[in-house]
Image (cartoon, rainbow, N blue to C red; front, side):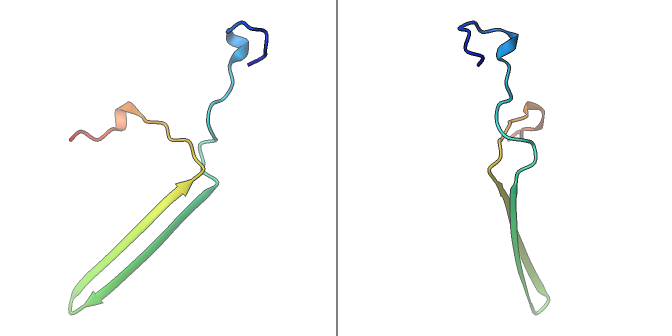
Length: 60
């Protein structure tokens, strides 16, 4: 990354975006009818880097 044509420790640069996404959003809705309640929540984030963490994967 420093342009000298040699790959070494001086070429280390950050990859991706910071850990906290700049944009987050969410929406929720719910209703109730004769003792039956239903609610949903959708949430997300944009402009973020996703890094898979092997220790936290779901096993199916």
